[in-house]
Image 1 (cartoon, rainbow, N blue to C red):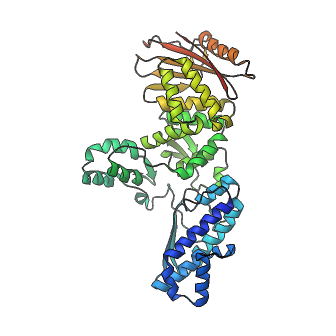
Image 2 (tube, rainbow, N blue to C red):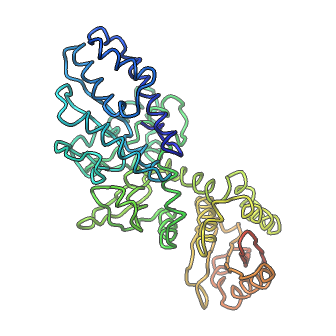
Image 3 (cartoon, one colour):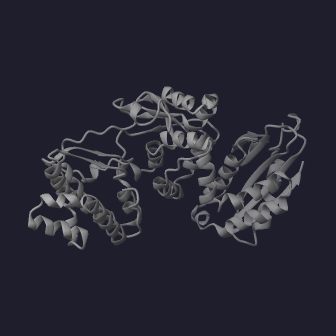
Length: 448
């Protein structure tokens, strides 16, 4: 049900009816086993049934298939939670849950034609009442050891695949890009990415779980500054410690730190260590996901890589005037950027810098240096490149932008935030003060 992500319940229900019509069309041959009344009901789903008749349509189809094949039916539903995630985001959750409670429970509960039903998803919707009265549901999540090797490919399986395609020499790079997921206590590779890699023979980010991206970004826009600080830690290749519930529901998602639950269960973060009870160390699993964060975060909060990349190149070239001009354009063009409040505005800018520069610079924020704490510091890994120190200020008025930028630059000098950089034999240091007011920005700088 991955395509049932719509803006309104009417649009979603229309797509549900199309999906069921196609399913009934695929199995139309079962009608030879049906009574005349049942054929009429079957034709209604193929043409135009009453809305209420769709609720039992999947159960009815299991009945028809059972009678045709004389065998119990297996029902497979992929991404069953997708329409509910969309409904929760778009404000029609009540209508959606009422329909799917009838649709799924009637199929899976006391259905004598059913052998087994398998549903996949990231959010466990049991507490929401979708399976009310259904007492035979067994949940296998990332913590369970049952079937842990079946959620992806093991390293031995990947080695075998690479050897078959004469790509075994690439195992280290493949591991860097696609390994790192943990199910139970097993390390698992992303199967979709491995299959695409052996087909294309190029290391790319093949897997982007678009069904969850919007939900992640919604949570980021509404999150606290602490979340952005944790993202900084993750983007620097380090770990964060969080409580992760073994049952991820919409109730968990609504909590202030629900975004970490979402990222773990949707595969954007991995559990690297259990610390006790429900507390775990989390990290980005592999380079493929790092690539997703780089492109996804920049595209969402900083317009696009096409806008952000030239800005960063101007910065590294020392063309601060062009850097300011392109930064101003980003503020003017990106509506999502405007939704961020206060400190999160320049934290998102900083995180974009961190993601973009992580292979060439050590990027840190709010570190102690000289006589205070700087806002952002870019220290080159190669000493022939310049260093950059940033101080950010928020102005109350547009007229005050220039003075605030000057104040930020003065603070860098007076508190000696660049102390120690010359001793590292870094040839050039840019001191940069940036002031923000709504969609407006002002940059002041000098070279030390």
